[in-house]
Length: 198
Image (cartoon, rainbow, N blue to C red):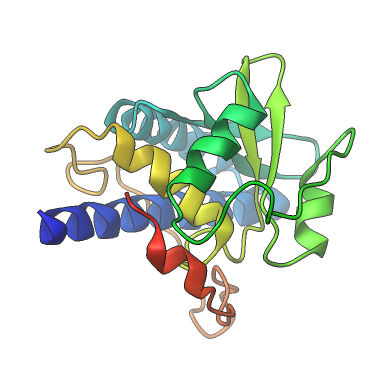
């Protein structure tokens, strides 16, 4: 059973990393005013539909602004407190009283990108779900708070047999791997997340 959960967790990490990497590359094309951007954007939206089907408690949405394209990740719960309390209860050495909780109005990615090792959540009124504000360079690292929260909910309701990377639309990007700014090279380990009961 433990090996099965471990392999499911690794599969989730690969799925998440795959989507974040694709969104990053499409964003680069968008920044470069590349003609293929909208073609790839449609494919990315189809991929998020598959992701949302595979992990029913999560909702991935492709967002396009005037400046960039990125993925928004939400948890299909209405209350930030409920999302946080469920997550905290899965970590044996942490309880709500020990957590450093601050309620901030108008929380956005700017806040999260400035402070490492911070879990930032906000209620998205338009979707009636809880959004995970994440640092893009640490989202797919297994020791980051953002990854562990998403993994906790992904493992709570998981549909086996759907491989996001197999038989998917073809994505082909030309880039120099030496200059490619990936999802982050260094992330300080947080021992606390090894104790989560997925």
